[in-house]
Image 1: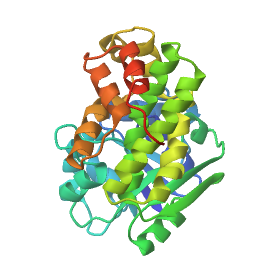
Image 2 (image 1 turned 180 degrees about the vertical axis):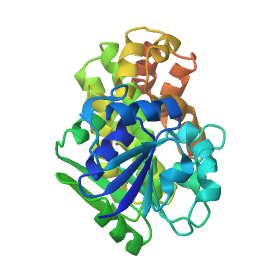
Image 3 (image 1 turned 180 degrees about the horizontal axis):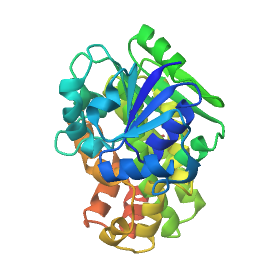
Image 4 (image 1 turned 30 degrees about the horizontal axis):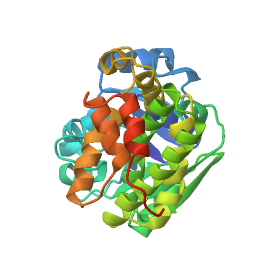
Length: 328
C-alpha cells in the first residue's frame, strides 16, 4: 500500500482519489479551505462528481504541508492555466526526488509551455510523468473499464508508478513520450470544439468524421515536429482521447462547440459552467506554439479565430472545406 496525494478536487482529481484509495492511502487537496471542509464532512464532492462517495482511505485537506507529508507520489490535477501558481505554493515543501504525475491537459497562455515544462521550472529535479488518455471522470469513479497511458522517460520511474497507480478495470500502458502525450491532451480539446461546432451548426456526420480525421493529422504533424513519437498520435493519448472528446456527450469542449454552432455567445456559455473548458485557452496557445515549429494547424487556427470573434461557425466550415486541394 502506497501513500499518494492528489492535488486538485475537481471531477477528475476526485475520481482518481476514489479509485486509488481502493489500494492506497490517499490525500485529496483542495485549494479552497471551505470546499475541503465541505467535502471532508459530506464524504462527497457533489459540485463536481455527484453521487460518488469518498472511501475512508481518502483524507481531504486544504493545507499544502499536510497534503504532501509522507507522500510517495503526487498526482497534479490542476487546470493548466492555474498549474504554475499552485506548484509555486508547494515548491518549498517538495521532498527531493518525489515524482509528479501530471494529469492536466493544455498549454499555458502567454508562455506557451506544456505542464511538464511548467513543473520542470518550478520543481526542478522532480521526476515527471504524464497520466492521460480517454477518460471521463464519472465513468472512472463508477468503476467502468478504461485504458490510459502513463508517459515517463525514465523506465524505472515509469515501472514504479505503474505499480503504485494500478486500478482495477483500468488498463495502464506505458510510454516514454511525455511531449507527445501532452500535445495529444491539449490538441484534442481544441479539435473537439470544432467537432461540436460542426454538430451544433448542422453540418452533418460526414463533415464531423472528416474533421476528426484531419484533426488527427494535425496532431501527428505537431507531435513529430516537437520530437515526439508517431505511435503516440495513433494511440490512446492521441486518437483514443480525440475520439472520446469529439463524440462524448459529457465532453465540456465538445458541448461548448455545439453551443457555439447553434449561435450562442461564448461569454454566456462559459458563465453558465462550473468546470474549466481547457480548449478555450489552449486554442490560441496551440496555434502559436505550432507556428514556432513552422507547423500549420488549420482546424486549431479556425477554432482560435472563432473563439476570438474573428470568424463565425459557418466561416469555420467553409474555411476547412475550401482549402486548396492536395493529396492526403
